Image (cartoon, rainbow, N blue to C red; front, side):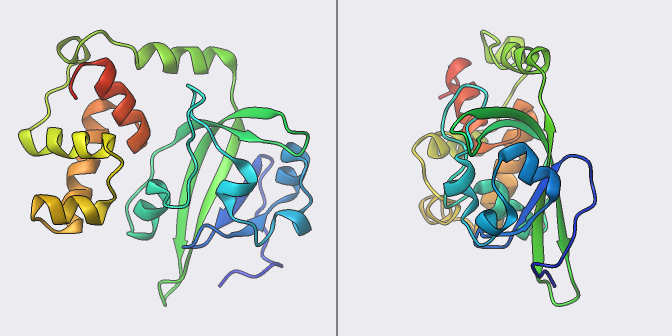
Length: 201
């Protein structure tokens, strides 16, 4: 489905990874934005090359990426903010849109389109995530959802949570989706951080 001759036509930096997080597409705008030529970026592990961090400078990208897991389970991934390392060893902040494309054999690629992030947007994101209480934030999690959030804070994987809770991985993913939706965040890490701020865990 995807080869090194595959092209992504967009003015913003864009890259795509396969199920293992290997970069299989790196457009000219990504070369300019990140400073890595396509020949250096392709076939690299995305989390090793870009070292993504959230807006609180916590480690965002990892080998077992929850967003990639969602994407290849045919679940929609909402937009999010993150910073990525550049070839000059600096960091740039982005608002990222994701699209997952599959062929008829269910081979897929997880595409990231990286829009430059302005400071004002980052500030509003931080302010929205620092509400003093769950009540003020308008959040009410079920007992199971709270249990899932607690296990996320303990860095348990989807399969580990399924085993500990006696439910299927698909049901765990549904609970995680509801937690993210209710907390109005996009990643597991953001959910844990906000849950701690709101004294939910």
